[in-house]
Image (cartoon, rainbow, N blue to C red; front, side, top):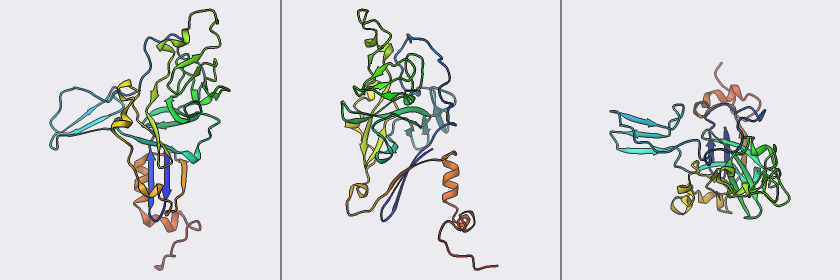
Length: 263
């Protein structure tokens, strides 16, 4: 889980939760180029199944529910149609790509110096599905795959394939050679992304912005940012935070808390 924390006179905490345990790192290729379609988000955010009496759960995969509807309220909440914080900017290094998992999606966050912005792409090369987060930023500011050196720009377009002959067809311009890119922005010194790479969401920032906390940009406030990897789900974290009785014992000698008076 990615936990982003910012504190001032009050405490602000953002949490991004992995839907499953971290995947093993790249071991071997799983698919040869070409691929028959341009990769999009792992999740489709809409469905038109018949609604049951109480609530409707729909998803592209039976393991993930993306839309929740309460028939009594008549309201829908789509988990994959929201902005999510990924990581504070202070924890990012512009020289290397970063692997993150948010809402069950494996993404790579990297600094595109050609467009002067943080980009969020699907963390897999369309050639052999190697994690792009294990690659590098080349001398021209492109994201380069660690396996065969394919290079991508901030829009997910393949700009160079080392193995393709210069005099041959420009195979790097094919849609099959592109990487899915997610809408992203920086707000409150935090990188946010929209977890749907369908082209129809390309300009989502003009229609809907991430939640804004003015205190985080107010110089009269004191804040601190940090990023932590916690190997459990949000339900365990919330249960822990809502249980102050454990603090004097579980954090004995670590936190300054009053000593128990009863014996």
